[in-house]
Image (cartoon, rainbow, N blue to C red; front, side):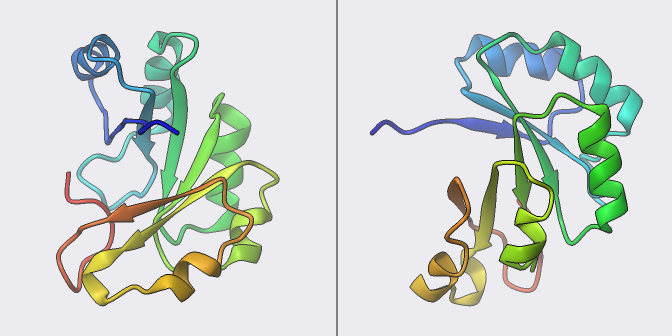
Length: 137
């Protein structure tokens, strides 16, 4: 099994090009509106068109209204969803898409948190500061 690299929070064409050129296996687009790396649907569509085949497109969500998640996944050709908040397994599975679950290590996450998402295609361990949510960039 090899380590795969995902570069997340891309908002600009130049950054996407550098990530792809460097060999990123996946690129992430952030759909959490309060994030400084949030991309709206028009910008995300543009970035998706520029992403070459065989680079996995990941949409990142953090405790979002399911209506917003549905709008995003109906608009964009995302390959994988990433849930970065306190989403339950039922919530994550409700969209009928493969997903990965991010777990913040800053709050003493144990193996029981890993076991809580048996339907996840993978788990992402995040090292954000205690008391904060989401990646630190």
